[in-house]
Length: 147
Image (cartoon, rainbow, N blue to C red; front, side):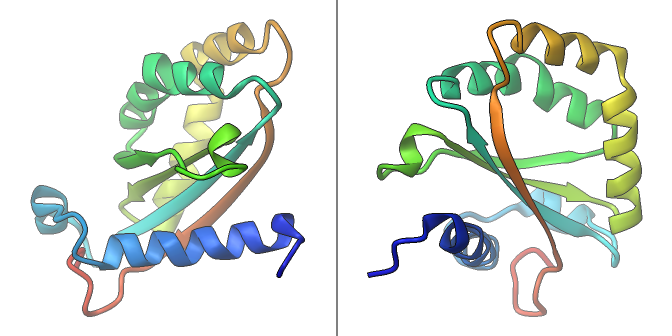
């Protein structure tokens, strides 16, 4: 049995994310039709500090998702693992960007947004929420429903 979850985790989430996006689980009708040839997806996995997952979910629900949209990022989906130990500290989500360069520009604008900076500082009042972040930019395959 593989015991080093820190190494296995990013790989397994990438495989999960690619399978989820390319599979028949969900059909993204409006998104798929509106995408450009350069459109990319970003799979992000946040590991929260102990006892801070609910605060992380609150920050996303109350601030982050709207700010992503403000800065040109498309919210595709947000997910919580079902099984321990990941269910206790993990948030997984997928964003879409017009291109990789557009995604990087959106992230820079997001980080500089005063509303984000206030929400970030307020959410950290009792200590940092995040232990680690893994980001993977992805292209849909030619057989994906995202094309």
